[in-house]
Image (tube, rainbow, N blue to C red; front, side, top):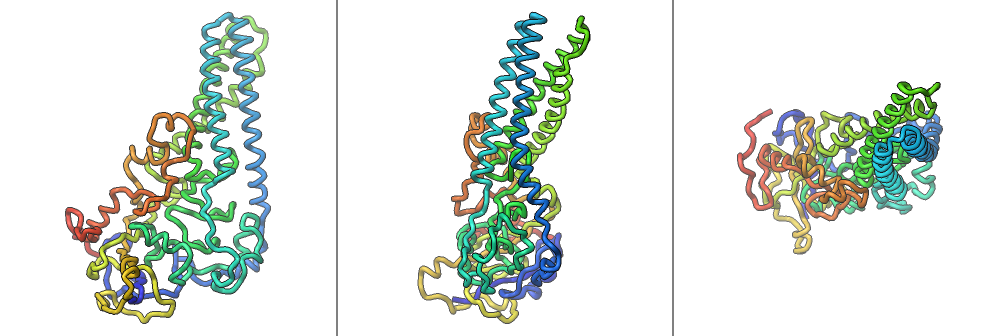
Length: 455
């Protein structure tokens, strides 16, 4: 089997689709740089005292706040239904129609709100979307010989306590095959998947490491104490349900309390009921907050983004896109061939100087398992997972009206069984093929041919 190609971009314009082959080097053992950070192990952790106080406070907040939220909804429900609808509107003012209509509407929204909240809470507690750990206590898999069993649970230790772990250069690295078995995956500029030095394994597409949970989380959105934990791909649809119904519920509570206040001010009551003032304040505060979160969640839904993506609006994605094995070298993009083979340093060479080597595996299964990928970069701000408004909505909220209205099941995007990609990619992948002149698996370049933009 010929040595693996692990190119590194050493001099590429961030806004151009072409590169110079003279700058493509083979670099398999050096750790990758990301975001300009140093590739040297971090030693400052031993000099800086750890501060678990903040994480402890956050964990206790996530345990206490959900109970307070439920109690608040309970108290508000008592005030709206018993005092406003029954005692005041129905009995005192004798406005039975208004009282009954308001009572029915409020109770319906209350049931939907609490059902969404409980579904969201238990989804976060039972399955927060953690990426399974593939490495255990085998010292040989850690490279440096340290045993993971000596460390405390990742959930209860400071990430700075652990030594920095460079990307695994083993071609048989656990979990690596799951990436190159697919046709497209997110990668670094050298063609290997993104690496988590804390979990010490390859990160799936759109996964990010949570310092609070000590684990990588799929499609992580944000840590929300209001709902008791991490909102991610397994709970974002329930989060949207909850914020929407909570907004509607607070709107009804605010309307009936303001109506009651108006009637009391215009009537013969000597003083205003304190419950009215309290519910107006609570419903206005929680209503505005829930309304803002509903708008934010809707924006993320229709653009297929997360809170983390919005914090990195100008980020550039690098994608490994599968191409035919016999695709000739190109000056527009580097390539990488899987499975990787050699652990030994490979002398720097040019991709264009290494076409079609005859030396290779003789076993037909090994030949069929080999896959070649073009390494393509997006422009700043482009989202390769944007499927369009309608498809983005269905990928999170489901495909039926029942799923849109009720918190029944997890989002379709939680399924990762496709051998094409971990998450469905949008039309940008075909645009990248056209932009760089990359053939598809049938050897055809998408309509329009390569872009004429030069560096």
